[in-house]
Length: 303
Figure 1 (cartoon, rainbow, N blue to C red):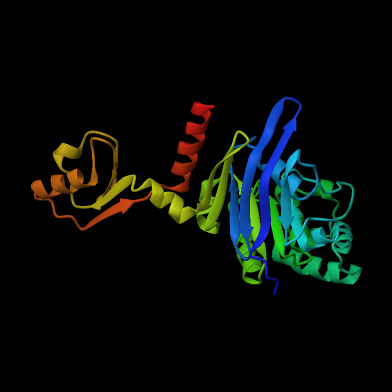
Figure 2: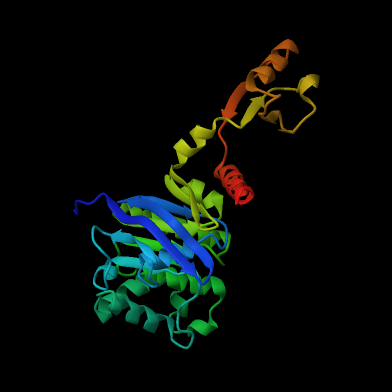
C-alpha cells in the first residue's frame, strides 16, 4: 500500500476568466479510501476546480497533489474521471470507445473488452455494445461514461454530477457500484448539489458557492456544530399551546422547529402540563439540505 493519507490535495487554487473570479483560494484534501462530496450550487466553481485538479485547465495560482505527487500524464492513468458534460464520440460504437479508453489507461485491448463486457452486463447495456453513442439515451450515455471511468480499476475516481440524467433505479445501481469501488480500495470524489446523495454516500464534504469555500469537514461535525434544529415527538395528541407556529404532524408524530421563542424544554413541558403521554422525544440535527441552504443563502447576502 502507498503511504500517503491524502489522495488529493487542493491548496489555494485560484482561477479567473476575464474579469470573473471562478475559483477563489480553495483548499481541501480527500483522504484515501473515502467517498468525498464536493458540494455547491450550479456555477459555484466545482467543475473548474475538478478540471484544474486533473490538468485539463491550468490554475492561475495554487497547487495540486494527487496520489502523493504532482499530476502528470502517467499518473492520470491511475485516475478515473466522469465529466459533467457528455464527452463520448457520438459516431463511435460503445465497445469501441471502451476498448480505446481502456488502452489509454494502460489496459490491453483484450482486457479492456473483457472488463467493458462485464461492466456493460452490470449496468444493463450489454445488448447495446455495438450501438453508436448517438443512438443512446442520455441516461445510457451517462452509464457508459461511468463504466469508462472505472474500467481500469483506478485508485482515484472523480465524478462530476454522476447521477445527472439517470432514473432512480440506475442511480441506486451506480451508488451500489461506487460502494464496491470504495470497498476494493478506491478513493472517490464526486460533485453534486443533491444533498440526499451526500447524506447517503459521504462522511466528509467541501461546500463551495460563488467561487469560495464555505465549509469543509465531517458531515457529523458540521451538523453537531449547528445544534438541534427540530424536535420530533411521538404522542397521541398535541397540546393546544403548541398548535401555533411551524409544526408538522402525521400519524402521532409531530415535529417542531426550534427557535428563539420555542425551545426543546418548552415543548416537553407543554406535553407534561397537558397530561399527554410522550412515547418518544428526539432532538434532530439539521439535514445537509438545511445546511446547504443556510450557508449558500448567507454567503450570497454577504457578497
